[in-house]
Structures are given as structure tokens and as C-alpha cells.
Image 1 (cartoon, rainbow, N blue to C red):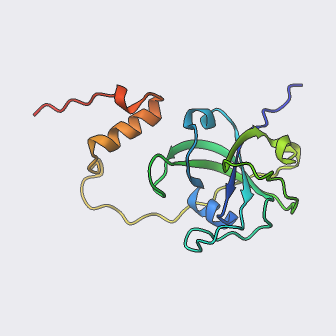
Image 2: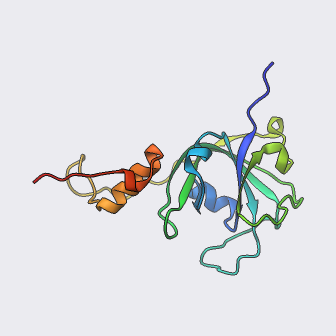
Length: 174
């Protein structure tokens, strides 16, 4: 019998489990998107020491694992400045273990395995993310595309293909 792949990316987040579930994942991270796309699990560890209440709605014990998600994609984040990413999840398992597993690492993103954070893959019970309410319908043709700057297009193509933005050339012929 083969052992399950328990590789993960752990994030030290000031957001609550309800917000992560509502947003479909954890966001505004500076990380290696190509690397994160290769691991199956997101581990969310609570940071109660963020004083920005507009950003933080933390509810769980400081340093505790409170949610494990199955990673479905890594996409540019609409939250935060610069090159930040949203780790999207398709399913989640809430964890109720108040033990502090965050060892004061300098970077809030840590790569490892579920075992590194005292999570037993066999104890996880996953739930599908709830359906989000439909956004307001856009006026105009169904195949309409939102305007996009060259810089934004290069960022997106760079992230998707894993190449430097400087290696992307876009030619517009009029």
C-alpha cells in the first residue's frame, strides 16, 4: 500500500477559518506559485498578533493549526500589493487542536509535510467548499473580456508559464 502524499504549504495567517472558506482559500502571500501547485495540502496556522483589525479577523488559538485545505490552484491575489498569490482550495477540514505548532519562523509561508505540523492525514474529514452567491451579472455580451494592461498581462502570463516577465513580449498590431 502506498503512503499518501502529505506535502503541504503552511501559512501563518491572521484570517479566520470562516473568511478563508468564504474567500475560497488563503490569500495575499508572497510564495513560489509553481512549487505550491505541486503540493496537495494547505495548512492554516493562526496568527493572533496582527493589530490591523481591517485585515485580521483571527478567532483561533495563536500558533494552532485550524484548517487544512486541498489545494486546487494558485492564482494572483486581488488582495495586497505586488506579486501576491491566492492559494485556492476545493475542500477543507477544520482542526480543533490548540497546540502551538508555529516555531516563530521568520517567513509566514513554510513548506513541509502535514506531520511537521502535527496533522494526521487519516484523521482529516474534508468538506466541499460551500457554493458562493452569484456575483451581479455583467452587462454586455457573454464573451466580453475585461480590459487588461500590458503589465498585468505579463504578470499573469509569467505566473501561469513560470517564466520571468522580462521574457514575455507582447505585440499589438493595429
